[in-house]
Image 1 (cartoon, rainbow, N blue to C red):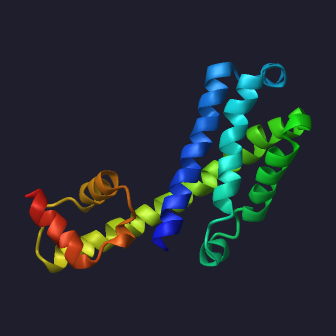
Image 2: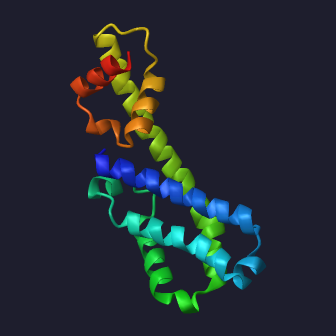
Length: 167
């Protein structure tokens, strides 16, 4: 997977969680959503960002993960952005309650696959260099969390350099 795609799917997941946070903050009720511009803004802005990010994924990722309705999410972004003043609140609520949890689950699985591949790659490097005292999973998450980029952005030698600096 391309580094850019890795970053995009992680940001999409972050925006999914922002909608969840809006639901927790304002209450999980359509009547509140319909009557509160602050709630709608808190929920719709992340939806727009998700749609914008979906426009940026590579064709390779679209092909690899064709179960995700990338085009549909791009369309949702366009509807919210261009029809915001006369948005159909019930349809938007359905997107939030029905479509978004499905997307969040799909993106979560995609991230899990990315992480599994990254951990496997680190395990191979550690085995080749006989560095048995290092936990590959821990190292992987440390690298991703500390650098903010995909493990794919690192060559094997850069990963080994990171390990040396860590010790």
